[in-house]
Image 1 (spheres, rainbow, N blue to C red):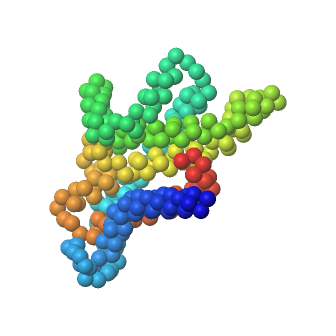
Image 2 (image 1 turned 135 degrees about the horizontal axis):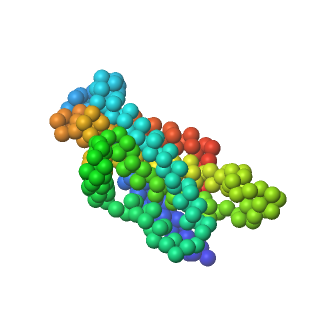
Image 3 (image 1 turned 90 degrees about the vertical axis):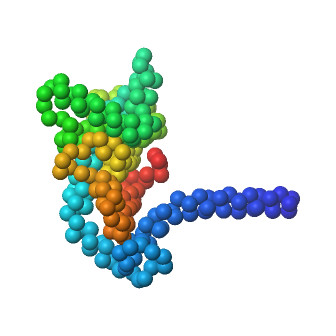
Length: 273
């Protein structure tokens, strides 16, 4: 019995050790980027000569970073709103109805998560060129074309997480509401919607983060004067390497972390993620 207890304890230590190593491996890039953002010297070198906050102030001195952040935020927010308007009904359709094309439609809605970003960006670029030639209107490189492209990568997150929430909804409560005289809209608004709110919020959050940080597809869709923050960072690195980029990355990490913590405070993301 003592031997079994020792083996069980050793297995628990081994499991915890493996989890700690995996977590450290994931966090190591974030730790080094955060550390680099506070270096005093302009050219990164180890060990650092000292520490300073000057690179965070330097972000505001670069209009392209501010404009890139603004564009990424506006595109991400609008794409998320449109994605919610399309993704929630799609998730309801997949979860509540059985029809001939149910399986292909489910796979199609999740396909952007599997297709490489470069392939997806190329396809969107060709589609926009074809649409522009066919309609004889400006499409390629416009703000709304960029938003339309980002909607494609937002919808799968919303559909996936809302569908997961719908799987945990007790249908008998909806049926009871309808038996008491509630129509379909009232039942959805008062019964279904509160139950799937965590999935909706989680889907919107992950969709926005995916859109905000997207690089591969955005490279094919941006136009003159419309450059998202990830592309600005890439262009900056082509000509100069200093802790400013690390400072920009730290700001992004902090903003995303704050949003996730605030969201989790109200909807408990662990329930659906």
